[in-house]
Amino acid sequence: MIEIFPEIAKYIPITLFLAIVSMFFAVIIGLIVAFGRRSKNGFISWLAGAYISVFRGVPTVVQLFIIYFGLPQFFPSMSMLSASTAAIIGFSFKEASYLAEIFRAGLDSVDTGQIEAGLSVGMKPWKIYQTVIIPQAIVNAVPGTLNVFVSLVKESSIVFTLGVTEVFASGKLLASSSMLYFETYVVVGFVYWVIIVLISWLQTKLEGKLSAPYKRS
Image (cartoon, rainbow, N blue to C red; front, side, top):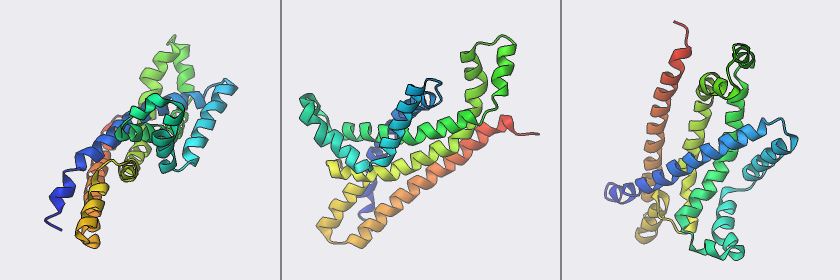
């Protein structure tokens, strides 16, 4: 177990790269969908809701296979798409469906009276959102957002089905060659556990820092 730990640990950057880049795009897409879900335009709201329903309802591995193996049948140029890029695209759209609801709930949690108060003193709607609504919504959305990121780090293990070698795939290869399945997968589990513990620690620190201005002294 000690001997194979460095072999598995060297793939941690790939796992984190897939998770962080996917999360970055998922946040952007999730914000767009969240505002669409809150839109007063019925069609836009329905479209955002349909997006959330589809991407939350279809298993992640199926989505990855559709993107990597299926779409090139209709768009030949996508055959040049690397497995890592396909994984990032799939994870981004998948996690965005969860983040959209988290962001929507965060925005809805802010008292609408603050919008009315801002308008009454002549503030522009975008300025109210920028300086009043969104900062408060972020505080409420951070726990759920980082929980999604934790799930994404663990879910990244399925990219081995596309041929990407990351923490889990490296463990699978080592276990197959050495026949030491128990020892290898214990190390793989330990690596994921350490990553999640560190992320959880950072989450606690971030939540405390963001919520500090809103705590009563």
